[in-house]
Image 1 (spheres, rainbow, N blue to C red):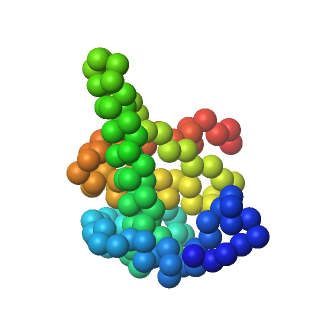
Image 2: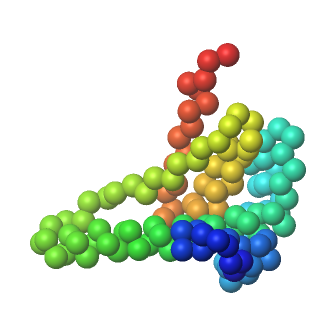
Amino acid sequence: MIDTAHSDRYLSFDRAEWADLRAATPLTIRERDLVELRGINDQIDLDEVTAIYLPLTRLLNLYVSATQNLHKVSATFLGAMAPKVPYVIGIAGSVAVGKSTFARILQALLARWPEHPRVDLITTDGFLFP
């Protein structure tokens, strides 16, 4: 981890450090899957998915599992049934920077985790004016 002036607020990793956080997270998509997920002119390859996306999906899986457990133990404490609560991930950015491709790849990877098989993608692309 790289030290920064604001290390109390942010964590900074170089590419190799981030890729190492993947640990044993398996690559669950193949090249042909990636071709279907890629946007026009996107240059993403399986190496990028392995180095960047897999550590992120591992971290998100930890967050989702912890959140699900929190709701479960809270419901147990309160003597109630644990409601199904969605875990929402928002992706923002400028036009044509790869948000949709990022979302499709993230969705494909997260949907393959055994703990949360239902992963929906809701876009706002249909709301853009020409």
